Length: 257
Image 1 (spheres, helix red, strand yellow):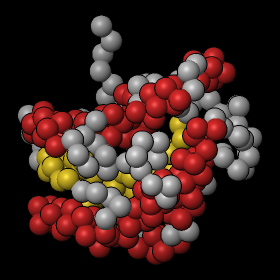
Image 2: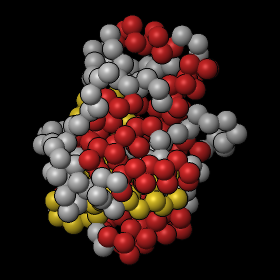
Image 3: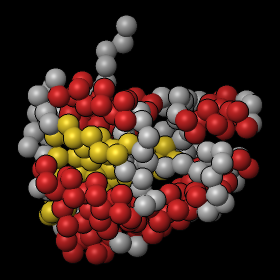
Image 4: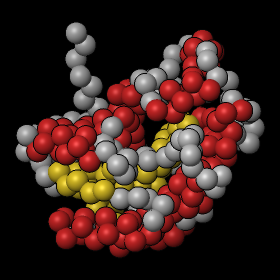
């Protein structure tokens, strides 16, 4: 049996508060778990998985930290404002904001949904959170190599709309770096390859059987959810690269920007 990952030193985030969007499951859940293990009070955000979010909160409270559960539709401005109003009432401020929630491959959504969630909502969440982010706080945007390098490296046709919208979101957030710098708020992008066990990987495999295995063969290794979440958690505390980009895993198949 392998030991659980502990990417952050116990107690290293004591006295700090972290919010991870889309953290009732998957990468978001493991990221918020790592923060709590390091002593941070945490905000678990979900869209429609309240029981999972509450179960995770109960687990994390047993670690001796506060865990606030807040449901919010990130594409709805009033819902986002209500979430951060609750964070302010409970904690007063925020030290780490991880923009993890994304999508666009779900069935039954409108043509513009990917852009609404992966670009517009990301900017909305950041701007709404800004009054709570003080000097030395950090914003982490989570993306994929397929999106980050979409301008120079083609990706699977089924993923193109998502990749383009996530890159648009990254670009929109990067435009705000000078303003964030003035406020003393740090910003970093974490980009990884396809992640084994995620909803996106499952949907891609369903649309294009063999796609994940093919990508795994090309890359040599694909991170699983816990491994990639560990990299996201580290990005919240590690030194930020000069280009504000933390590339996780193999990038040899991707042409530079």
